[in-house]
Image (tube, rainbow, N blue to C red):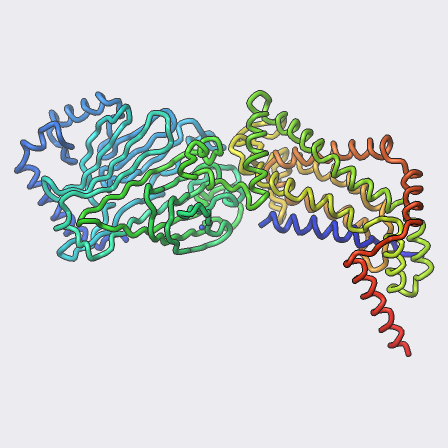
Length: 617
């Protein structure tokens, strides 16, 4: 009895799907001696400030950081309230608007806390991008007497003011009455972007300009999602070049790079980003990314550790660098508002045409649908519309299968006639295809045309901020996996939970493959059994999607149901096998002109047959 096998069309289709899946599977503290020297210098500065107390009491300036005089403290806090700022806690000052709350430390003048005011983590904790020492920012420099200092260890004097309705915080590290290094933060009313300027005055005799100044920014990404491994997959250091080109460090392992002409750096933490950019270019940047997640863990608090070192140039003996901070959501709508800065390019839409479809079709289309529909229903509606738009491709695919089914008796006859001569059997089979006007590759073309859609959706669901923490049926977050049962153990590649949407999607895929493959395709010798593929593909999808965005599993479940429905309509109401058979017979009577590929294939097969005959002699 002849063993059931698949034809070349089926194996190529399987390879394409497998390739798609594989393709989709796939960032100085000072010495004690220096601290002592710094402390001595600070004491000298404070003595200098005491000698010029009249100047410090003027309206111009910030107050000394060690404020012991109760009247001074009261006046200082009163000035804070006048501008609407939150009063400082001992050694920090808060800048906040309706979107984000920043806390700046007097020590180092750096941001020591960045909290999203409108978002929470999976366990209802406020989203922090900077918190409890996970980040540091400072500038290393050498003094004229060859001491190496870092601004992280200097004490800055704060001044609060207002500029056209914007809140302004000036932090000055003073080397004398008119000598200082200033960090200036300016926050707008409803904006995640904060203007940040670093400048110096009168320090050309203090800072050794012949030695490079280096800005050093480090951050460890704080976990925000229930699956740290899943979140880490989309946590990545991304940066933009002056020409608009976007580059990235590795998402899956440790990586480092040195780049030139960089516009901004994004420390992305899946759905939230910490971005440092410049109005000019950073001429050179040394970047590192270290992966902190080896496997799924319920206790791991960080995902990746980022670091950037940026040389800063002094002009005319002074430092002046205009920059900006962005602490906020990795949301296409929010980042798209900063079009001139190109911050939306930091979102992982995907590369090439896949990213273009995701960014300019699926993202705005879903945003529109979800503006008046529940988020889960919006996915269902989008799925229906996408499948209807792809129905002509589905029709072409099913028509190709119907033609192959009509030819099945003749293929079987050729298999029996030339069962002892595989080369001759292949020649005659190709000749039959040519006469009938049937291409064995035609079934692969529709699958190839759907690849951009498939990959674009694969990137859309886990990265769409609109889906974050949006529930539907039993899924509490459509951007992450759904859980209907927790397992007391971990299954390799599957996880420690059971997701229902992937099970439904896999069942739908199984029935779809039953309709389109095993029973309809003529079998060829030397190919694996089609039943193996029918069982393997749904199983692969079940394992893979169990830890993936439930929105994507929902999409493929609905998509396959719709596709099955469309194919039933095509089979029962549109295509007529008798007419297809008659058309094939008519095609056989017509003279066929070989194209170059067909002629080359025929010649190669004839040569192989001739060599085989010579070998027998």
